[in-house]
Length: 134
Image (cartoon, rainbow, N blue to C red):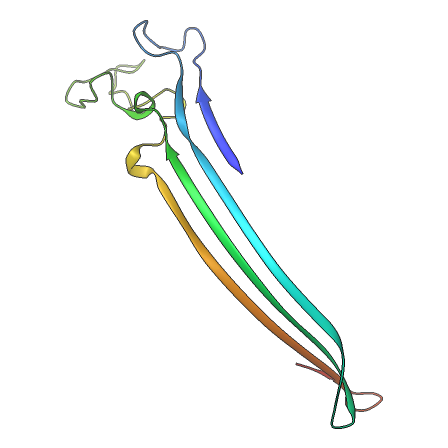
């Protein structure tokens, strides 16, 4: 899965002529690899018949936040918050592009995990009216 957000302002959106008109704000990525195997069937033990099932699963997950272009998240052209940039109502403007400020190198992530699972199921009719499973 890849999720990308590309910013393109609309006319009259408060973007000044010297500001960039578009920027790559970064990406979200997710990959998953899964392998599993299951077996089942009857088994005789001590003259008694059992139903047996067993299985195994391995899963690898990877999650990434890829940083966007610096202009998508920096504060003005110089990235200096000491230089106050005003928003439409006179307050201090947020850093980055309008709409979505982009992912910074500080928020970039490349992480994952590995999972392993095993199961065993055994079933047997103890009597004509009593069934046990574990």
